[in-house]
Image 1: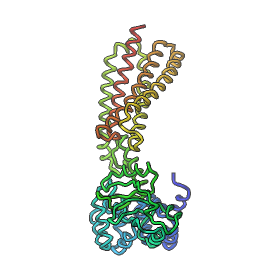
Image 2 (image 1 turned 120 degrees about the horizontal axis):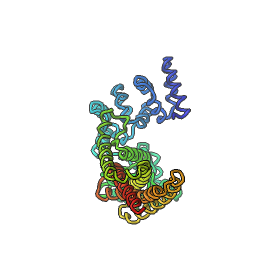
Image 3 (image 1 turned 180 degrees about the horizontal axis):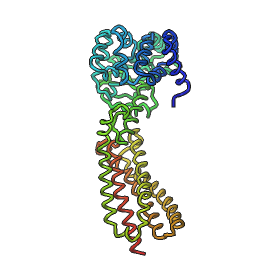
Image 4 (image 1 turned 30 degrees about the vertical axis):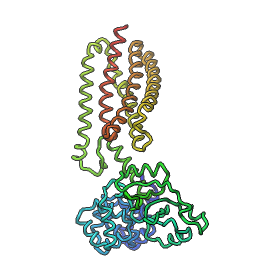
Length: 450
């Protein structure tokens, strides 16, 4: 649902474009937040998008809009601009954002932009492009505020006033004479300390940092764990090569969460709306094939218990509820484990404790729903034996499902596989087969005893 404020903006831009009053559009865009303009562009026709983007007069404002737009949508907008305008936009854009954009643009456009940029800025961006796309180096900004440990608070604050080129200053990183990172001081520490003290006296020496080749998701975990606003990126000698700010960390968390959800659903790593129908079919086919094979095996299991079914046909009516409810428990446990592994809250070394805890959850849910179903079937169908079979089957299957849903992602993580990609099909298929075996095995046992 589009927020009312943005819907009004979209309608107003539509109206002004139809009337051809471009000056009014320019005035409105100059007063609109870059994130809102990026949202607006998503809801305009292709020709209108290019028109509105070109009507943003201030190159700084235009650069901020570029940083907010989905990178995949930028190519047609940038391709309409001349070389002079491209140079102005990327001159006002943070180098890490520029590198991210250029990394995915068609080579013809990215080459034209790099050629247009000033030599120093171009080299800075090209240096960032050398790092992997999903590494700390790939999302860092090389502009960091650094101060030697012998500098006084007064001198550092005065230097901060002159540091216009640095995108965001959350911390002052303190270095020694050899430029090694030895500490960090927050802006609050600077402002609450007497001006004659040195930053070496007020710095914190326990600095959380990452290397340039650290996975971006691990960097995001560290920022979240220690409640940081930025994290420095260092080389092997502890020289600072850049920093990752919290705005980039939010983007990483969003990307990784989206990727995990799509992988769990068997839709691949890219947004399904961005891919062709053929690509979507190709991405989903293997997972659906695994489910079909599992279903065929489950059907074979049911067929092997045909003698039991022929005696009590009512057993077949409760197959969906037994398999469905236990499958949901397994899926829930798997989702909890995958998310816990992704955020670092669950460690594979704690397998025993986690299995016991989720096993208790599965057992309690199984007993609760087992009792409910036993009572309902006993009253509604007047079938005491069937009620006992279904009740016990639900209890056993839910316990088993919680165990499988918890155990499988932990094992895949321990073996070095991505649990988000591997768990879903395995859990679903195994629970369908094993759940059917458990149900009919218990049915045969109860019927034999009665």
